[in-house]
Image (tube, rainbow, N blue to C red; front, side, top):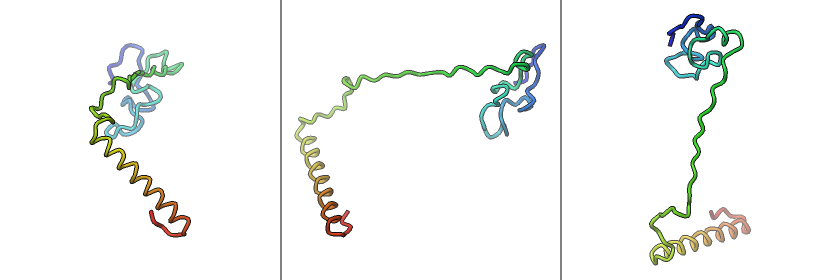
Length: 105
């Protein structure tokens, strides 16, 4: 980290480690040298430029996403209908319990 070229100086804030605090426990890069541990003479005067972030762009075409399940499959259809019925019953019990002042949740 301290391969100094002519005109370079060791960062005074991190003492050349490139880290804010203890280099054994990662605390993030030094905000003065941006993790390099050194500054050239221009950076020592005007400050080191903030690095440009790396952006990753991902797009997903959900129309091509195949789960292998079809709601027309009789087993899946029965499962979905049963879940909907159970959810409806649970909601109804909760509402009736709230009306009657009990906690049937």
